[in-house]
Amino acid sequence: MKQKLSLLVAVSGMVLVACTSPTEVATELVAPELLPRTESGEVLVGVPTVLRWTPAADASRYALEMRRVDEQGTWVDIRFFDEPEARLVFRQAGTYRVRARALDDSRRAGPWSDPDRISVLGAGPGFVD
Image (tube, rainbow, N blue to C red; front, side):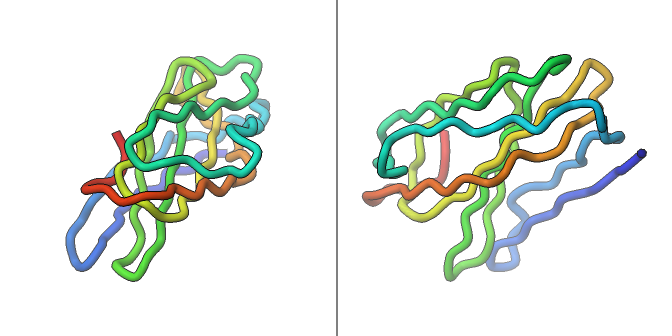
């Protein structure tokens, strides 16, 4: 099944992210499962945290979507990784939803994992490094 989606996210009228999803959905790829980080699910602003997910057979890359919703609107960041893990530093407190998906060599994407919630505690100047 071919599927081409464009993502355009605005916060207070300013465009933050514009990207295009993979052009096809690979139904044979299995959704990764996000693995627990800490018992509480909380991380601190400015402190590196590692997100891990189960590897998917036939995956050559992984997409990780991070979403934050607050009074100023929605912020979305999608990053790509060669391994089933990501080392991130959150720069702003808040609640983030993260999910991962596998991509094969042809850039076909499998289904998204179930989303996970991350509570980031503290104060800081930006979003995610």
